[in-house]
Image (cartoon, rainbow, N blue to C red; front, side, top):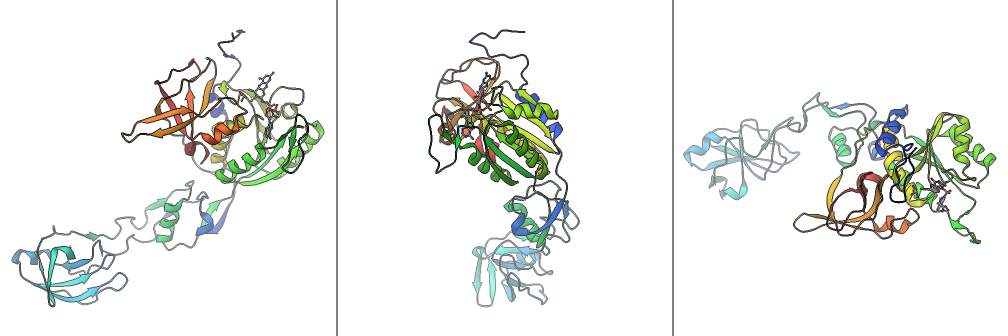
Length: 415
Ligand SMILES: Nc1nc2c(c(=O)[nH]1)N[C@H]1C(S)=C(S)[C@@H](COP(=O)(O)OP(=O)(O)OC[C@H]3O[C@@H](n4cnc5c(N)ncnc54)[C@H](O)[C@@H]3O)O[C@H]1N2
Ligand code: MOO
């Protein structure tokens, strides 16, 4: 056993962040089941089956410009071309187009099959019922071809894709009104702690208001699950055991905050140990060293530390990837950027540090970050001031102002 000195927090029993995440991802399977929903309700959901294009998109050759459709060969003579008709978007020209003729065409209008090129109207002089082309386009210019976006039969979206605005639009372009999406994971959550009071209740000495449960509500809403709020529990072993059993009956995942550590009132850890399906982890990270993870009954279980910043950071690093997998999405590690720190950052070696930072970009493109106030796991205001986590490697000590550091933007962690 090593005995860490005050300037080193190395704990040989602790898991690294990477080891802990790998164990989480190894354990979690997507939830079963899907449902058919209308396209609007599918926003943010995960596609249950691959979708292929039933026809070419766009379905017909159409003009990219307002102008005139013509035969390119006619331009060699420089002769005036006679306008024989009009093609608006949704109102095609149905006649023939002969040599020396052209058709007025609008953007999105079907390009008549006798023509091969569109000249935009700014490059044309209109003379009565004809035109003279002043600047010749290349052969084939300004025509959008059938199947250029999607070929009939091609896979448009794969199973497991999250449906954002672009995906909904794509599905709509195929004429679909409904789509099969995966069932939302059911996530039950509660907070624990005798000191916690709800809004409206009076604070006695030693009490604080329960903020984690509302934070969890926000985190779970953003993560896209069916969240079930089981309230706040006192530090009572029997009540906690009952709530956990009830949660395991109705949820795919249980998330709790508080009581994750080894204190006398930390019942969650004890109950999980008895159950045998979940373990207490020490993770070599700051904030968020204590974490309970595993199974309780049929549900997955995360017991997050009570400190508000620790709860949010462990949610971002472990619960959110687990939820992605439960939802049936692929887990893609967050984008890590490099920035110059304007603040000196205090750290002792031994734990990977996730400090709260404010990232800005200068007009020349360089990224700069500064510490968002006091770096302690009870300073929730720092989370609100911050827009990124500054990741300092496990072995590193304090960092001077001016050094390059890794930063992970919040939208990569909480989206
Ligand atoms: N002897 C040791 N003590 C502690 C260790 C350790 O390794 N050995 N780890 C420390 C670390 S690091 C953390 S993080 C905390 C985690 O403790 P718990 O998960 O057991 O959390 P609690 O003790 O219940 O609460 C910690 C802190 O957070 C406040 N809290 C709890 N719930 C809420 C809530 N819903 N809303 C707002 N604030 C909440 C609570 O009042 C405490 O101040 O353990 C350290 N101790
Ligand atoms: O790991 Mo704790 O989160 O430092 O306060």
